[in-house]
Amino acid sequence: MLIKFFKPLLRAALLLAILPAPGSALAADAPKGNLVIIGGALRPDNADVWQRIVKLAGGQGARIAVFASAAGDPTAVGGAIVGSLQRYGADAFLVPLAVTLADSDFRKAAEDPKIVADVRGAGGVYFSGGDQARITEALVRPDGSRSAVLDAVWALYRDGGVVAGTSAGAAVMSRTMFYAPPPTVFATLRGGVTEGREVAPGLGFIGDDVFVDQHFLVRGRFARMIPAMLKTGFKVGLGIDENTAMVVDNRRRVEIIGHKGALLVDLSRATTDTSRPGFNVANAVISYLDRGDRYDLVTHMVAPSEAKAGGRLKAPTVTLPQPVFSADILGKNAVVELMEQLIKNRRTEAIGIATSGPQATLPELGFQFTFSKTRDSVGYAAAGATADAPSYSIFNLRLDIRQLDIGQPAAPK
Image 1 (cartoon, rainbow, N blue to C red):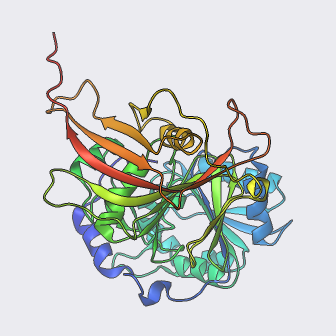
Image 2 (cartoon, rainbow, N blue to C red; image 1 turned 120 degrees about the vertical axis):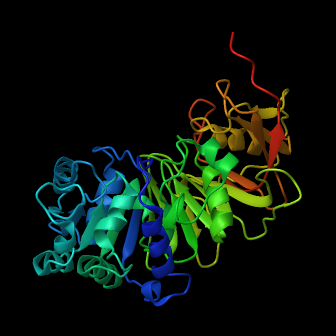
């Protein structure tokens, strides 16, 4: 979820100085466990995701520690998650550790030997949604070191347990996470990001080299992740959609499960032009991973699901009569819909536009997103996919972004 309030800048700066940098000892151990990173809004009936969490925690009767540390009402939110896990066969329990938990000292709870023992005895942990800054505040000491409970979570993960998280609980999987971003994606494009304010350290379970974001397709967040990645030096970004999860195993192989999919952003060959005004990037690579698709974080290879393995799209013979275009590329699912239109016809380029909207009080700016096919671009379709119910995997489209000056907004009457 969007963070609803700013924490003191000094606190964030301290965390940035002390929590792990790439290659540091804090994330140096090679965990034997798995991650289940959920894009938020996980439905109680999404058996694919809930059952996978329970299975990875040890199967029926597995102990799973639920952290509702991000929630405004941790008792209610955590209780609902415990109930869902129990319906799928887990022996789940709520960890009483949250900044907002009434009549509780979260600092003492984070060092409580009983809570530590309960977490160490579990087969998995689950972090709820809410405000990701509350998770790091609850689990990281003021000097930036791990609390005893956070050490227990890491020990569980290293020993083969599962660490799952939804929404805010997904954001903390990164070494660096969105901390207090602007309320809109466009504002991030226009204003950029500052370390210690818009972005700050997460818990780093996925490793030092991958940036994670959530609520991704329904909120157009791919466009805020790219500036954050450029600012913080990440080359690989994974954004997972709502009611969907990516499972990362102990060999760092990613599998998409659940309702929809994820976007993979590769900036390994991307460049920016500092002589041009505003945010810009050239030669980024973007892929859409659908349900069942896989990505290897070590080899950087993508693979379609078994259902699509024989469905590689042939060279299109049809050209759309109109350009492939979106007037609101930040709209719900707009980026994937545009990518689908491009990959299944003979046009080689698609254009998406983002603006601040007609109510803007500042001089109107926009951004142009140009998606292009290259020799590496490929698409796959599941058997039985139709125009009304498409199911595509789209790998390796080039993406260029540049600022547009589109004049002043109309004066109010």
